[in-house]
Length: 59
Image (cartoon, helix red, strand yellow):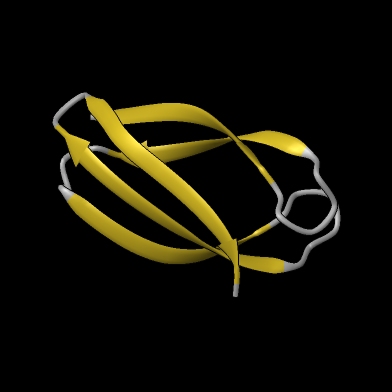
């Protein structure tokens, strides 16, 4: 199950939605900001259908 969560780019501060597959309990991946295109790391802990924690950090 996919869930959308609003996140903020650690570089430019822009807020945008990120869709997370909550069927994977612990995730760590790099994504690019939709505005400034700089990559940053996302760490997510999930239960099916629910995001328990989500952190973003410059990579």
